[in-house]
Image 1 (cartoon, one colour):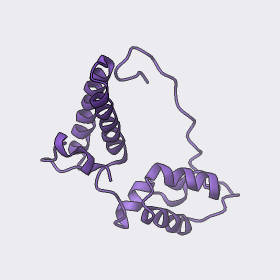
Image 2 (spheres, rainbow, N blue to C red):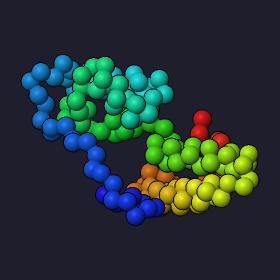
Image 3 (cartoon, one colour):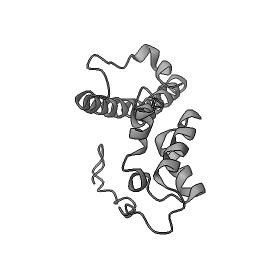
Length: 150
């Protein structure tokens, strides 16, 4: 897939794990759901939970075991965060670039970074509004950026 704001083609990511549950799988569906809920209550992001389950527990695919994604399990048990993870990451990046611009007023590349990051945020927000994950009237308040990332 091509990069969003450059002409680079990019490389494809890692291979998806197999859809079927292997015979050597150490955990069953309900046990995996309990682990996901445990780490969600410890305020971990879905990607962090997936890495912990893969590295520490040997769970290759939560979806193959439970027929649900990690975010769906979190939403079902009311442990989901109010904003999607990728949107929070973009907001954090925007905060970091703006803080850098405060210190380095002469940095013209930082101005471009703010423009690119804010356009990515607008694009992601538009998608999440369409998908129903964000309210239709939700806007990113630039004065209260740090409130979104806690």
